[in-house]
Image (cartoon, rainbow, N blue to C red; front, top):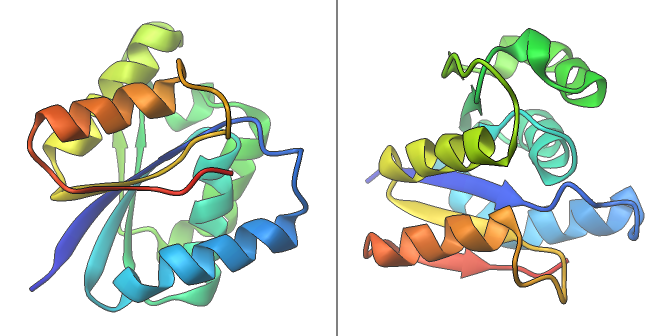
Length: 150
């Protein structure tokens, strides 16, 4: 059985070295990678870090979802997508006119609606973030969710 998994997480990742994120991804994404298709937002932070890790360390199927177009994403995110483009099965551009918290939340709901579970990497101590909104939406949809604070 193939799982479809939304990845959500904080954009604020500078408080840990990349090697710690890689260890977290190996522990918490690794067990799913053999039979999963991951849906990853195309933003900075956890989105870019998980995209690069999954593309470089697994054979999992990958879809990148952005609220508008890839060209409107921050530079770091565009670079991550470009770097692993040959590993990305699909890029979904939702066509929003502007980038703001509402369009990112809509993107996250779209991903949850198209997947069977969510793995979230919220910033420890931040309870009002978009990551938590996505995890709450997942729960409200009756879908499994895994929370890995960072």
